[in-house]
Structures are given as C-alpha cells and as structure tokens.
Length: 157
Image (cartoon, rainbow, N blue to C red; front, side, top):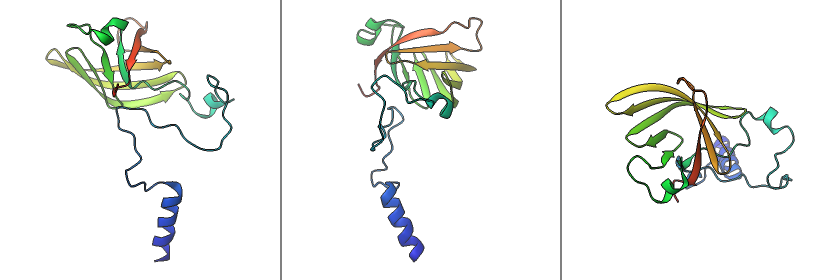
C-alpha cells in the first residue's frame, strides 16, 4: 500500500500521470520545457549543447514545406507542399513511412519506405531544419546536393 501511495505522489509531482496525457500529437512539435533555468538570449544555444545532445538546436522538421513560397498558398497540380510528421512524409502522388529516425549533430537521418506511382522503394534521407527552411538530402540518389524547401506552416496552420 505504501508503494502505491509513494508512486502516486511521485507521479503527480513529476506530472508523469497527467490526465490528458500531456503528449503532443505527432503532427506538432512538443511544448517547450518550463522551469526556472537561466536561458541564453534568443537565438543563442547554451554552451556545449551540441556535445551533450547530438542534433540539439535545429528546429523541428515537422510541418508543411514547399520548393516555392507560392505553392504554400496556391497549390496546383504537382506544385504542392509536402507534409512531414514524425511518422510520415506525404507529397504529390507519393507517401513515405518513416521507419527509423536518428538525431545527428546536423539534424536527423531517416530511413523511409515510400509508395508512389504503383511501386514501393526504400530511401535514406538527411533532414536539416532551420527557422524557415528545410534541407533534404536523398542519400541513395546520384546527387548529394540537398533540396531546400521553405516552411509553409505547422500542420495545424
């Protein structure tokens, strides 16, 4: 009985048993951590964060992205934004399941299973997100040049 009471108190103290789950949907980045820590000025990272947390710092890749800004507001035919969640990447006439994603010092690497145009294929990509851009490098293709996309919005926007 003591164990149950202690676990209940611990759970409440750490908010680990939040009634609404406290979990962000897979289509949106998580809420910032709240606390009393001293934070660096906006735009600056705490010293040594890259060494402690590989991939820390780059903004989240989740959202709607397009090659041209007007595609965000006036999509037509194959000129549409792609949508990226934590589980999939959806574009014009294709969809990729993110089977594995690994945080690295420059962003993320992901293994995809893509279906489109009547066939399936496996691909590996690198994602490097900035405040307003996302560079995608298709690692299994002949060109290793990243494709730069512009942020349209979050998926809820």
